[in-house]
Image 1 (cartoon, rainbow, N blue to C red):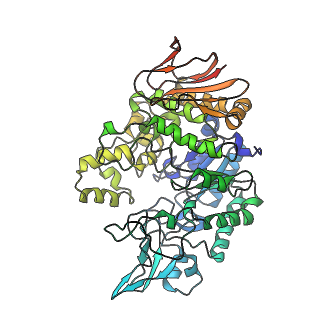
Image 2: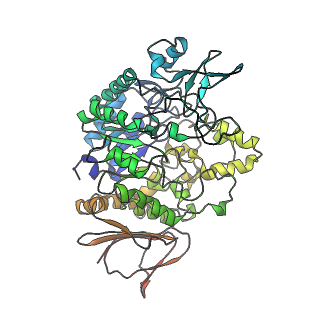
Image 3: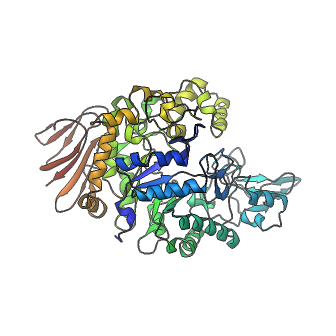
Length: 566
C-alpha cells in the first residue's frame, strides 16, 4: 500500500437534507452538520461523504445541479461550507463532496442557452442531435431506453432536435467529448479542492461516455419502441480517457480522495482499471453488487417471506471483488446509501434491532477496505412505518412510480407495504437525535415524517445513555478497527471465507501472525457452525457467553463475534 491518509479512515455518509436542521426550516443544512461534528468525532469516524449541496431545481435532491459554483441556499452558502471544512479539519475529520458531473438540471444556464441557440457554445456542452425521419414521422436519433424506462431522447419543442438524458428528461447529460465542457468541469472541481475539500464522490461516473455513432441497439425493443442497452452509455472504453484527463488536469495536483460511483454495470476488472494503485485514475469505486442480495429490488410481486438474505451469494459477491482488486487498489465497503432501504430492515431484523445492527457492523467493518457508515445506522435506524401513501407522495421522484403501480393494478395498500419494505425514501428519513418532536431533527415539519420508533428509544440521546447500546458498540468497534495492527491486518493480510457455501453464517479469516476471524449468524433463529480453532481473544461479541462444544459453535439469532484465533 502507498500510505494514503484514507487508509486509516472510517467513513460516514451524510444525506444533508435529513441529518440536522439548524435554522428551523425543516431541511438539514451545513450548520446542522457543524453542530454535530463533536458527536461524529466521539463516534470515531474521520471521513464524511456529504451528499450533493449544489444549487438545484431539487426534484432529484441535489443531483440535478443548476450551478456547480453555487450552493443551494437551503443548505447554506460558501462561508458555511468553509466553516464546516475548518471545523471538521480541526477535529481530524476529512470531507468529500458528492459531485454529479454526468448531467445538470434543465434550469442550468448552459442548457437554457443551448435550447435558445443550437449554434451556441453551450449547446455543445450537451448531446443535442437532429432526429431521423421515417416517412412523415420524426423519430429520436436512436432507440435507446433510459433508466427512467422511456427514450433517452426528448424533443426540443417543435424542432427537429432532441437532447439526451440517460436518467430523467429533467436532467440532460453533459457532453464529455467536448474539451470546452471538460475545462468548465475542471474549473469547478479545482474551486472546491482549493477551498479545502478533501475529495469527491463522483456520481454516475459510469455514464460519462456514450456511443456517439447513435446507432440503434440490436437488443429486443419494448412496447415503448426502445431497447434497454447500457453498453451504449455505461462504462464505455472512452470513459477511461476522460478519467485520465481528470487525473492529469485536476486530481494529481491535490492530496485528495476520489471515489467513483458506477452502479451495477462495472466489473471488478473495470474497477481495477479505474482505481489501480499502479496506473489507475481514481482511488476507489462504489458499486451496488452487495446491497440487494435478498430479492427485494423490484419486488412488488413478492410476498414478505420471499425476501430473504442470500448469504452464500452475498459472500460470493464480496469475494468476487476482493479476488480481483484485493492488494491492487483501495476498496470501499458499505451496506446502504441514499438510494437503498435501511440495512437493518434489509439484511437484519427490527425485531432483533440491537443484535442484527451489531452483527451487520462487525461483519462489514473487518472485511476489507474502508467502511462507510450510513447516517443513523449507528443507532439502529430502520425502514419507515408509514400508514399512508401520502407520506411518499411528498417526494416528486416517487409520484410517477406510484402512479405506474396504480395503472398496473396494484392496490394502494399493497404499494404502501412494498414501499415501506424497499423504497429509497427509507434512507432519507430524518436523523433521530432524541425523543422530542420530529426526533430532534428540526423545530419545523420535515419533508419526510420521522420514523415513530424514535419515541421507543431509537434515538441518539437514549442510545448514548446506555453503555451496551448499538452506538457504543459502534464506537468500540471503530476503536478496534483503527488500531494500527488490526487495520494493517484487515487491509493487507490475505482474506478467506470459512465455509463459503454456508447459507446462514458469514464467516471469514484474515491471516497474519495471529489470525483474526469474524463469525456472524445472519438469521433470526439459532444456527450451529462447525468450529475447530483455538480462540485466544474475543474482541467483539453482541451476546453474553460463548456456546461452543464438540466442534460446534452454537449461534443465537444474529450473533456475531470478532475473534483472535490460532
